[in-house]
Length: 496
Image (cartoon, rainbow, N blue to C red; front, side, top):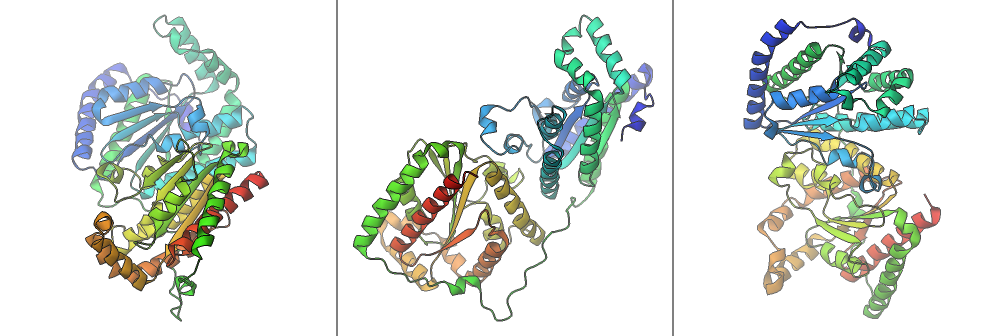
């Protein structure tokens, strides 16, 4: 992949001097147009060999562009906060919003490459992480992110020459560190593994751009023109790249029998039994979250269900058993303007809990395949892809030690009507009922089909759905508490 970057590309000083002003002007024009019509964000990843001009080029781009519309992030070693979460978490947090440019100096590629170079991962783990990257970049591309990946290249001899020249220059000697020379000694190993990594991740939606880093004038113009061309090409199109959906439409059963139809929604629980069992289960849950083994886990609870199905009451019975310092409730409503400017899963990645903590989602990422699907807020392609993207997200949580438990609380249409009327008649409950709740009832059958599709496509062995018959609130609360306790206990006992 690097042959063309080793043939000695160069630009003379006069040519460079004449080319820079119009290039800078064009870049600013494209940047301001991007701001005014924020259809997509730009993500620039900067990688390559030490001494190849990565830092200088990043600083130059900041100089050529309006820095107020650029967010540059340099990623170093993983800290304790990031170590407690899935490895992609710290990159999700820094993604640029629509209409903006983000530059990552080092990224998830650095994590993967140098873990392999230093012998911290085996080849199978290396390839597995590369596959994680492919899934992420496809997801970002499907959300409209323009991804530009630059590899600044030097030959082994060129790297040695460059590092020695910097060391002799009193103004730039500080740029050369002991790690740079350590990487020089590992040049062949870095090159071999980088080539493998780049070959597997050189895709139509996020290709690599290899730049000869030996000549400052050449690399600066090459990067600037590549950035300008990519932005202009995207702005000229009336659509963004969309990968083919992995999942064809799910056919409706020809007998019209749906999964939710099999539930016996009316369950009975004796009041005395309810009180006794509630105390017992809350005590059990408290003990499990205080278990020393839970310090290496996290708990993610997802609550979805029909309007007025009792999600809030069930959540309160869980939090009554938890240390207030250990949990956080995340109420999910329509995305804010800030959230709409990001890839759609971004707002959920922000709330991934650390080890020993609990995150409770009152509605969740499943809105993409429920309300956004039914109400037409997401295109068919968007919500069809979301099944895969959700499974991938939850897989990453589980791989990092999270225990993910998700509930669908189901009530009958008649029971919902009674609860709606009660809320309207009770002063302190009126805030719970809105015009939107009444409108949703008109699409009851559409939502039922969407829920059944959701369960069929996202109930996995690692993160299954628990359907809760919720016409009786007491029964529902006990079933939810017991399910959470059983899931916690099973994972803690298994040690996996």
